[in-house]
Image (cartoon, rainbow over all chains, first blue to last red; front, side, top):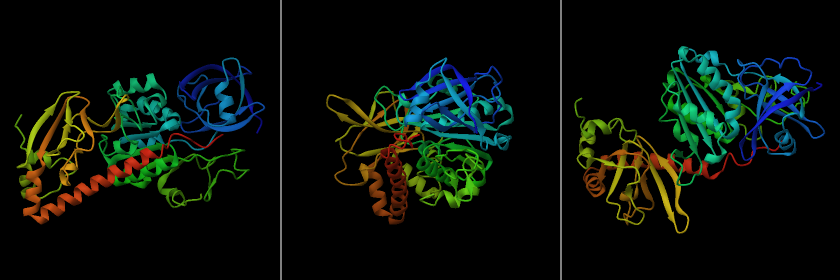
Length: 271
Length: 157
């Protein structure tokens, strides 16, 4: 339960309120291994601790990468950290994206807003195993062009023939050449066979609900759809109960969950 | 490559897919292939809505002109989408500007011609209305989600 001190080795501004931080153990040891979709509890000393998904490439080794949006005092303090500053890290915790389930099938990644951060390891992992996939589709929704994460990397993915990328924003000026509209509007036209696809979805819960409905309407099976549940949590080790989701805990069974297994809880309004 | 007839193309567009071949032939009688260069307008707000378009390739922006601000982009429509509902209802005026964002190929339909065929064959009229209503529902729901500004304020932490 004691956070391990990590030093910020690099920070990169993604959008007006989001930063990607590279963290290395302050004791000089190795950063822990992790799986795509897992999260760490990041502690801004003297302010507080929040769960943040790991946005780096699990295969790359090296520093831990976290992409954080400043939405409250703790996340704002983490975003203010600069190279040389220290943050506490506990983890990694939670379940991971079952990328192997997409072998021989289409991997469909649907991200809304900062939801692209926990899905970046999936995209990188899927690209690494691209020859074993039937297809790879990435659909991204954002508030505006300026709010899209990983700008240069996303542009690179758009040019990469190994994956089909659709990017859409809720609002844009006349200079924007991409789609305008919610991310669900990209699903019907996306290049995948719903009978042979596995979907990985992250975003605000309302967006995920409508995205899952659109994927099911397209013909996907609920057993082939995975979502990442976000809940407030304190301990990340099932003791505080803050992240309880029906009979499960977002910190243990989640954050990545198979939609077919949580469908009945997902539709409970107050859960 | 053999040239495909309009009814063959229509059969692959979501709004018309699954229609009886006789209906596809009837509807295609009111359609013609067309194209727009990037920046060209398919329709302008306030103009008479004599037609509507099914996008074969390309992308179209629906916009509203705002003095001093330039066009305000509402949504974009891509391959397979239908542009224009105003031909269905009086006073048959376009509500928005429709601008090709890139070279765009369409099937352009004569709205009055199709309305006439729907009047003559009520079953066709019902089927088309049902499909357009479904199309409008999808667009309305997407617009509602867009209005929610879902990415704006996540839970604080």
